[in-house]
Image (cartoon, rainbow, N blue to C red; front, side):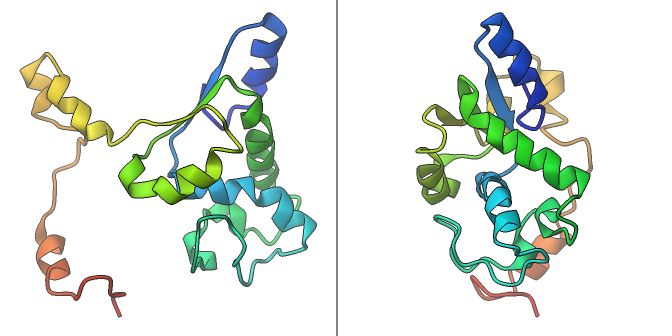
Length: 163
C-alpha cells in the first residue's frame, strides 16, 4: 500500500494480513516526515533552523517537503503525514523509491525505525527487463527529454549553487 495511506494498515491488522508500505518519496523526505511530531512538539512552526535530523546535515527549510513547512500546526496534510509515519513502523515492511548509493546515510538512520526497510531504485534500470520492445521506446517518462539544461549545467563548477 502507499505509505501515506495509513488507514489501510488498520484493516490489514484486523484481517491478519501482512502489509508493506511503499513510499514513493526520497528517503530524506521520509526522514524529514518522521520528524513532524517533534517539530510540532518543539513549536518550530514555522521552521527556522533544522540541525537535528539524523543523517541529514546542512538542511535548510527549502530542502524539506512542503507539508513540513506549514505555519499551521493543525494543517490537514501535516496531520495526515504525521499519521502516515506514525503507522509505518507497524507495517510488515517499508519500501522506498531510492537506492543505497544515493541515500545510504539516510537509509542507515531509518533502519532502526523500520527494521524491514527496502530501497527499490533506480526504477528506470528495470526498463532493461521489459519484454516488449515497443514499451522501451517511451522509457520511464512520457515527456520529451530536454537536454539544453545539461549544456548549461556542465558550465558550472561541481557542487556549486547556481547563483
